[in-house]
Image 1 (cartoon, rainbow, N blue to C red):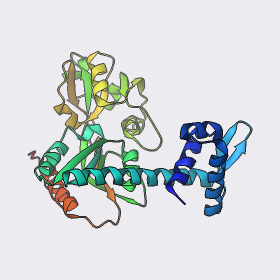
Image 2 (cartoon, helix red, strand yellow):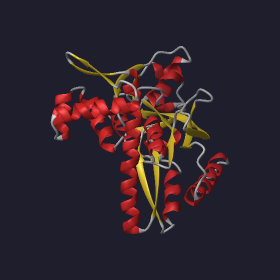
Image 3 (tube, rainbow, N blue to C red):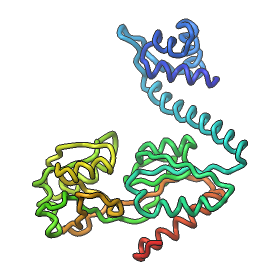
Image 4 (cartoon, rainbow, N blue to C red):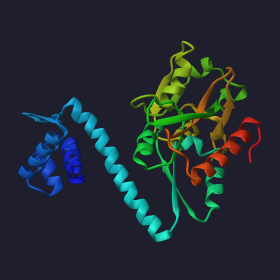
Amino acid sequence: MELRHLRYFMAVAAERNLTQAAKNLFIAQPPLSRAIKQLEEEIGAALIVRRPRGIELTAGGKYFQEQARQILDKVATTINDTRRIAEDRKTVFSIGFVPSVFYGQLPFMVRRLRRNKNLEIVLHELKTRDQMDALKAGKIDIGFGRVYIEDPDVEQELLFDEPMIAAIPAGSPLTQHCPSMKELSACPMITFPSGPGPNFSDLSQDLFHQRGLRVNVIQQVNDVQTALSLVASDMGFTLVPEQVRRLHREGVEYMPLNDDKISVPVIASRRRGENPNAVMRLANTILNGLVENRLTGRYP
């Protein structure tokens, strides 16, 4: 099996059409069909089924697609890192993060790591689920997110639970006191798009559903900055982790919630069973200090 077989299969899986996949690969269709046939023979399982309207992946094909994607990502990452190390003679340490954790202490960790002149720190903004794939592909070395996702190849560590607060339009009557979840449920809510598996949107809306409350979602956005812009436009409120309070925005007031124990986790994800190298040990030491500062009420 060669890497070209994986790339050919991924092209077919993406297009679900042999003719179009061959065009994208700049090869004729017969060689592509033979390559897919060779791949299936080597694996010993059918990966695709030809239908009148195109190609369908078998159950094995869907599994192979995910594994092939990780392999190709790993190869691309290895090549890029090798070039970078050869040019700069630096060790690359890559960090994945969801935006809402970058308003707290994570920048201090990055700053501390950058003091080491032999390190090149690379940051990737990734949803927690995407961090799982990036870790397995070697694209990142550690990830910081908000949700638990079961994966046998990744271990997740709860760093601390962070209170949720409400971002409310300035001048709203809700800024005169700490609003309750019941009061907020009667107001238009700005949230983030839902997707496969648990995500921050699910976490924030579940806080209402657990209390038997319905929410009136009027707008879904992709990032915190856009959500706060809509809040400043008096379109509604949104729930954000406490550290977002550091992001000052005119027309927005951050209010603690009247209900107790409303929080979201901050989670670190690493490859399972991997012995930490010197860089990871340094990162873990810095991280432990920052977490201790957070838990004891001291920010650096």
